Length: 156
Image (cartoon, rainbow, N blue to C red; front, side, top):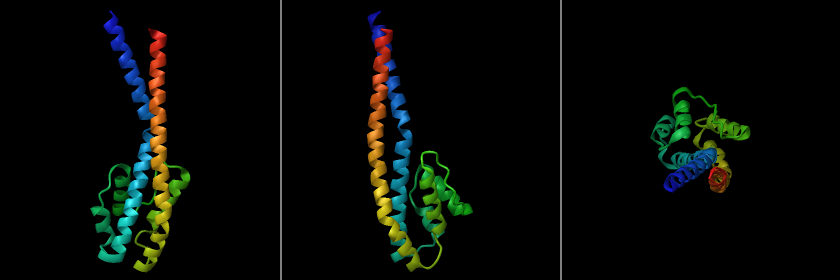
């Protein structure tokens, strides 16, 4: 009978930890989004300076994943600039919309200046979001673990 209690306790603790991990998912998604946006900006700047591929070809060839890929695909096909991801704040969605609306507008020099000016801002946002994801991820996982332990103490 003791092994059944131990097995149940381990399952409850594992479930609580999983819930904590899942609760931090929005912070991980946000960090991944800004890492890809920063990488895309760097790639776009290098394309403007050297290779000068057409924008459609660059959008198709960029190795994006998840929501960022969905956003790039929607922009490439329909030139849709809206960003509707719930893990982004309203200000971040507006900045992304402005970023997309500037892609491919004007000559290469003005594009290089405009997107070069965003380089530091995107790098800082990438760093802040990665730190938040690590911090909040650890916090929520620990809270889930503690909730599981508390529940085990209450039922055993």
